[in-house]
Length: 413
Image (cartoon, rainbow, N blue to C red):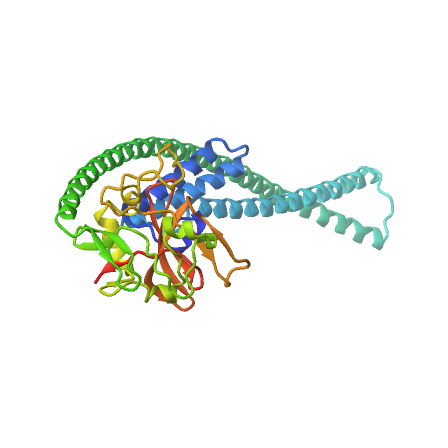
């Protein structure tokens, strides 16, 4: 089936209902092209594409598909018949030329007879004239038989040509009728597919709405549980290295710092090297420094740690709205709201980042726009980060150079 995917530009990773939907969408596109084609050739080509898509759909549904192309076979047969008719026409022209030559020869013989002397007054004849007369008599008999045979052959060939042309015309009419029936069937199938597609959209919309309602209810319940759990645990932790105190929050089974780390490790920097930025957003760290920057009993979270948090908060598409701090340093989102709802007290802030020496130029960027945090996952010269933007609730994932500087959130061991 690989040639079908490549021919119609369909993602080979699609399976089941998603693949069938993609095939139907492509079929609707080719039906539209066929109905609006400016020429018979383009309409015929679109019809072939539709037949190919029907075969693709049957294969995707596990139904048997007949081999061969009927239209291609009919076209080849019609071409062979046309060549046969052209050959018969050439033979007919040769026979007509022969008939003309025979007629001329007969006319010449008839004229010779008219020019002979009257038998009632015979003239002396020589042996040469006698032989010539005998030869003319023999020639007179032979052209008649040959002419009759030639005429019969001409009539047979002409009848065959006429019959062949009649068969070709009937074949063309049958092909046109079959093409029209196929077009009508395709229009009918297209209408049915359209109805099924609309019904599928309706079911998917209903399912999406039910899923969103269920997620909303689950998020509200989890937020309430998180608030209750937070009220029963310690609210702060002090870093023994520099005496700084950080708010902490228990979210589900995890305990997180509720602020970005602000420990002055060697190589860390404040945004644009301003102390007020450190007080507001915490410090920015390269990945190697971040791996050992958290205080005792705390560590840099893994990708799995982050995903557990995001799943608890509603998933990658919406968790950012519940984890971002309210108002404050975030720019307005598309709904005009500043920041998120901070349902769990995580209070994510847009600390921005610093492009390290691995980039074409080094610079600070992004405060107020997005927050980016290191994870422990890495490969070669890059490591994974999780991030949130001001415009939506997505919690994304990316790969940054280890020399970049971004924020750090610590999780308890």
